[in-house]
Image (cartoon, rainbow, N blue to C red; front, side, top):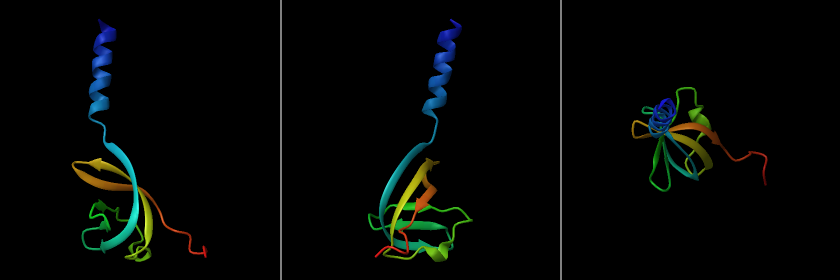
Amino acid sequence: MRTLIGAVGAMLLISTAAFAGQTEGLIKKVDKDTLMLTLDDGKSYKLNAETDLDALKPGMDIVIAFDVTNGENVVTDMQLPDSDQN
């Protein structure tokens, strides 16, 4: 019986975990007031306060890792193109 209760508890924890995803695209807009980044596909992602917003420019290619928290896409990591590539 304890095993069954433990398994049910584990499933409840798993089902409430945030969804993690990854996407890539071109930056369409960076809103410095709301800390939101919008890609060319129209989807928006919340940036954290420590993000160097001046490094993010419209038209730039970006790869984003994100979690969905409270219905909002929250950036957990991002990769910008290398500036020394030809």
